[in-house]
Image (cartoon, rainbow, N blue to C red; front, side, top):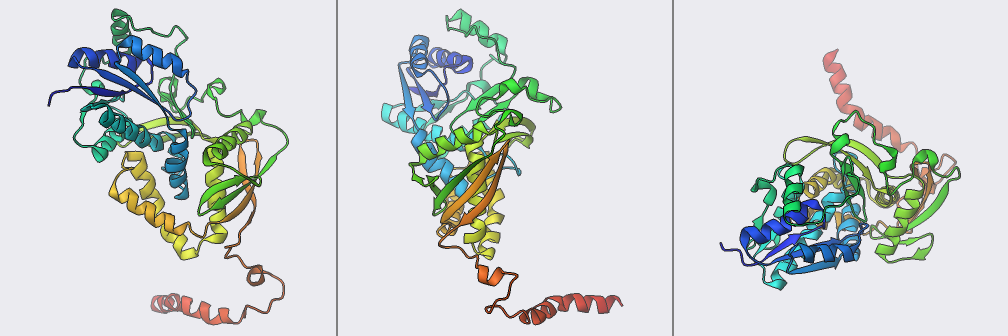
Length: 398
């Protein structure tokens, strides 16, 4: 298959800048540099200028923040998605959106190939490429890190210098990071030793819990069908609501995580994360479900969370099985309506109140005071029947 035009997922950093020039030389065809704005702090004018100066035929910057919150974060958090008990999937959820827009641009611009800057060791190569395949299998996929001989930072720098590609003169960070609206992740470098504590100066979205305010903050989140719709009584669009949660959570040191996880490719990897708004949202959503979701429905839904989360982590967002699970989970959310009150204090996010018009909690049944709706004598037969198999087992042993 001949390559006529390539769309590159481009950040403007050293790796993708070198890839941009390398693709143009290797394939002798136009390359479009595409960047996705999903909430990271970036000088987009500088990214555009550098892309054009490095040889891109065109630089396209797509504002995907609104779509990211509404069509990716919220669906995943309706499912209480979490990988290996702790990771809130900040990078994993973003990759299919970036890929979807890249495929759309390729189709619109008449490109027959797409490329990315993910290495051959990580999860992102899988996420990008499974999305490309699931959306448009006719596109040729170019993964430079798996084919070229520029396999070290020194070689990248030498290539950049030889081709007059600007290299930032700022001090190199002793780790790599990925940032979007949902989180910032840090890995590699000094963090590769799992015994090394992260440097406090590294964190950007959250203050240190020790330096957080000495006075707690209370907030109320209202949900409809499992999605947040209002904050402290004010109706808000999803992007604005989630942005505010990030700011409030970050100010109180909420959402920090340090863990070792299992990558899809087979190795273990240490990651440090900041997910303030996501931490608050998941905690509130989960709490509201305790009064609005039937016990047996919750058991089935909870059994799906590990599989659902694994699909996202491994890059199968556009798979039929993820879509099937999403439909099932969304059905369970029709009764998840109401408000949760939370207390934020020095890194902690604690629900302290919940109410709902669809609540299954009935004080008249649960009270320890006198009631006229529950016959406690009914428990005798209930216990006897549930204890029957235990009685038979005990008699057999005797």
